[in-house]
Length: 168
Image (cartoon, rainbow, N blue to C red; front, side, top):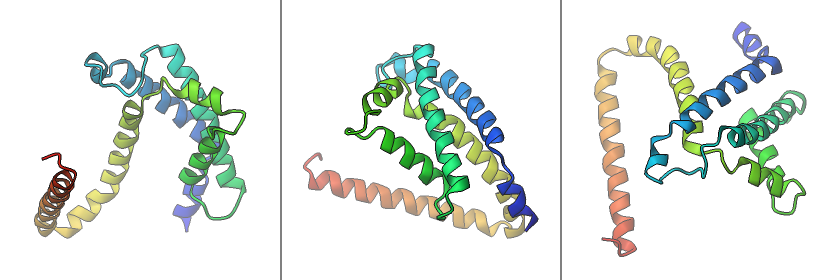
C-alpha cells in the first residue's frame, strides 16, 4: 500500500524534470548518431535547434497526456494518454497537423529510444536481481532455452515469409 502511494506521488514537476533530462540525452544521442554518417538515419538533420523545437512539441504533448492520466480517471495508463494526445494533434484534418509533423520531423526515433531502454534496463535489473538470486542457477538454463527458442522461431518465420514473397 505504501508502495502505491509512493508511485502515485510522482508529481508533474518530477516528470517535467525527467523529460528535460531525457530530451537532453536523446539530443546528444542523435547528434552523435553513427548511422547518420552512412545516410541510414531516420531523421533528416542533426541541427540541434530544430531537434529542440521537436522535443518541445513532444514535451508539451507528454505533459498534456500526464495531466489527463492524473485527472481523467478511466483507467488508461499514461503511455496511452500521451500517445492519444500526440496522435490527435498530428491527424491530417487537425489544424495542428502541419505544425506538429514538420516540427517533429528532425527528431529521430532510434536515438530517442536509447535513454528509454537504458532507464528500463536499470529499473528492471534492480527489481529482477532479487528474483534472480531467489531462483538460483536453474533460471539461467530456462533463460538460455527461451532465447534460443525465440531466435529459432523468429528465424523460421522470417524464412517462411521471405520464401513466400519470393525474396529467397
